[in-house]
Image 1 (cartoon, rainbow, N blue to C red):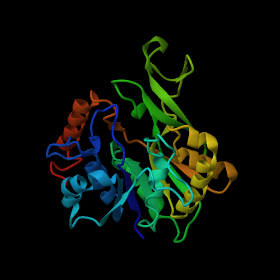
Image 2: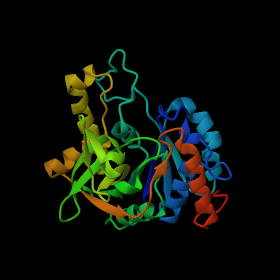
Image 3: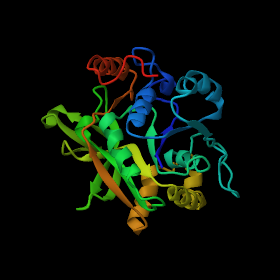
Length: 305
């Protein structure tokens, strides 16, 4: 069974200042997600699923889904603040979505095969899709508890226009993930010899150039939905998560629980791909130019679909 690509597209880019998932950056108005889908099809993925907000379904169907008709099967699912298990209600005053793993949960009824989760606004690159596509395609039928993530080398994931947030990963001799620590400020520090550093309190700590970081490119099998559903109930049952109106149910939170308990393993796949994206509005022009250079080099056709 061919794996499914599951795109997280329910968020607004607050720092970017608009709905960047629908921003045309390619020579014929292609979005970043168009390049991800093109690469995924090349890597053997057989279905595309998006999780979006219901309020931009019409725009999404007109601007995005229509271009894939006849290319690959597509489905939508929806993330809403009140998409909660029975017995739970949205705390008064809460407006922030419940996080990436809540978004993943929304795919439970439409995804029955191994799947890869990605962000819509990150350009991951062909090699990254080849790595995760190969891993998922090679899983024996009915596999459970054997997950993977693409570990991008941190040096290939920086922005020239400010700091980035990355999940810094550690793994064992089997390349199985042992920990993901979210570092919210990573950048090159001129006063430390242009070394890549992360901020810890008031201190900047150097990072090795090739340390793997998570760019939210995960490979799961459908049993992951069941674990997530159960743990989300635990998350919501914790008073501090209901009192904190910005508490989020993140993918690394779920993965860390499963690997710490020994329930599942998560293999860290290496990639030579260089990430780029539009974390900041100032990133946009550089992204347009990088995509154009890839078209000029023949990596992508000028018109994808």
